[in-house]
Length: 185
Image (cartoon, one colour):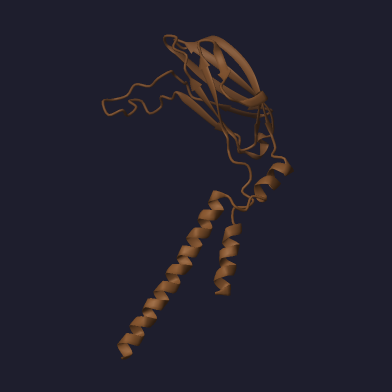
């Protein structure tokens, strides 16, 4: 029984240092240009993500989003306001995209990123807009705050699962013992 309790305690500690929960921020690009929907002070944390949505309804418009930081550069495909779908709701062209998702996961994510929005109409560059976002490293205090939280929903679920498994084992052993004793009689 002591071994079971020690194992349950150890498994409850798994996930205590899970770190920052990923936030997903949205940037909408429409007829008026890029509009950060919810990026606070143009600053996010490492491991967060930004979704760039093309919502410009100008005829034959497309958008390319480019993120650069030093020698790093990432670009979206041509984004359009909507993609053609068949009668079942599936995209006709798998390459068609309305959104570009970018996760700031890499080790070099921390720092100032320049974001370029290049709007094309009929394949010709029509408008160009530049923005930026600063990606911050998680502070030591934020990590401690997460580590101090023993009673998270995940840890409680782990504990219930472990206790259920241990109860199931004891019940199985008890049933087997009862069957053995009834067979001997």
